Length: 265
Image 1: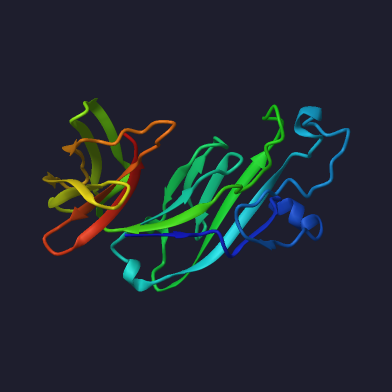
Image 2: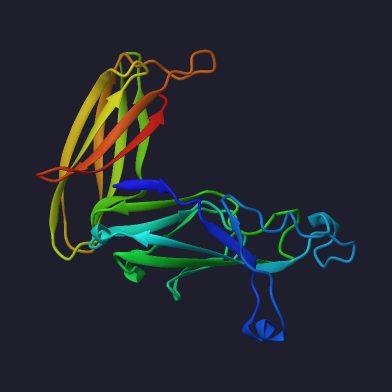
């Protein structure tokens, strides 16, 4: 599994209709690196329809695009793109095909890319965004937060799929519940193992657990592990002790994916 920044190599321009293009020249795309606000550099006017609460900024629609190479060894894997924020009403297209939409401007969303990719060659992603009298303050516009490209095996951990809680704590021990969501997007039944190690602030292992899970094709399962930390160091304002957890998804041959999280008790 790999997760890499997808912020470089974008271009942005005003979104116009085909009819507007026939009427005369339009502004060419400008290279940008994300995060980017397409609105902040535009002229403001006292007559703006958005009004004073949005700083008299204009409304409009914007088109982001990026061309990127997809290697042949991505074939058979799950490729997705995480957008941590696009304002607003994002429409995502891959090689001209509609891939997904997110109307809300402040939430993270993920678009699956692999059904639309051309392997071993260049691919183009386009993201349309708009703003029009829909905010009580200056919101900016466009892809204003980071983006990440994630490549996993067909059997993988779900996005944000590891949840940690500490339901029972005493001076002598703490119970740490780790709930891990596993997805099987392959065409056959798969058996994998979820393993978790807990570490204290010095990096020493304080608890270990593992559990197998079998998933039918196209199914999802939650694997629950209960680990015990003896004589836990509690988090507090004066002594904010933290622990970390590393969760691995393994088959018989290799580690398919790993995820890490920090938590307090």
